[in-house]
View 1 (cartoon, one colour):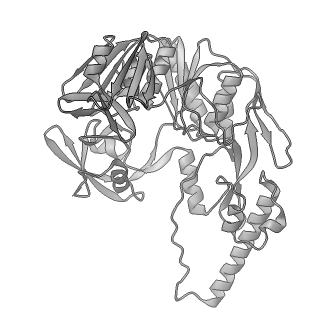
View 2: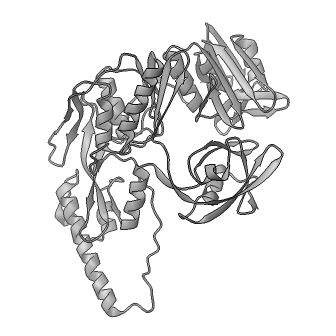
Length: 483
């Protein structure tokens, strides 16, 4: 995007722990008085901004004589936030998909935490590779430590040092790295034979619309007859970016209706858009929020989205603006509620998919089936998951126990284009496909229940549904089925 505004959609912010020196014994009374004046000016400015702009139209007397934290808390609005200058910088980095680290994506498997993707940055320069197992951080073994805690050990302040030991086959390789700001790509693409394009948008950053335009053109040059737009786990971003992305699929119209503190509707209109000559399938989940919901809602209302697949979205139907403050810092204030072009409410409701599917890999498989690919091959090893020999970031776990291989029931069902349900009477998972319904009880060893998920013996499943073929050597699992 060439012209960014401060108007934005947001789902949440990352809170930053700030150490404030409030009890310095050397602080003078004059300094204290000066600081008190600054705080009073800042509090007054926050009150005036909230009274003037907040969508709830707060009354001044309800804000007066309250510190900033209490004023904001009284609004019952998690999206209105005061930022210190440091917090504002952190927030802006998050908007642009920047973070401080070494530049890797990892996944947790029963054997440990493995690198699945290496981005441009310290890790790639040091020679880290996809498939490496994280063995130690700063000389301490991470065996038995969960992936979130390992990530916390690896990340840290910019320009600080971290040592990461990886295992690659029989080798143990110590790597010394310097943490840097990493800009993760907001948009990636791939093509699934015989002609299904796939675009993943992880955030509506300042250049995500231009990246989407460029990568869509690449896919079209390669030859595609349908497109999957993946907005899962996308928390939102800039308003202008969302608008330009709507224009990739719709010639003209209204992107959203907005209602401000005075209940005035100021629809955001657009023209000079275009259309695409192929069906569009949108992937969403419960973490698709804000601008993701704006784009999905608009493409649904204009009948551009052939199917929306996944889970009901987050339900953040509000617009925030950043107001820099004369007294330092900034306020992010909810200024409007938005509705879809057909005046559907999103806030605290979300957008319902046309096809409800739970689970990362089942969602992608379902989208590929809908887009016209009947045969799906899924592979899983320490480097991650492949679908039809194409690497994907989606993942799933398997359980190898007592000579059996257990795979999530939703993955198996989705490969057949089937439906799945829980039979409370039999304590079983029932899968229906090809006119057959098969029950897998937890009492017979055909089904394992772990952490709220059902895993079915893939051998038993293949006996019930011969449309599935599979192989497993303890390192590589392959599942193939034709819908």
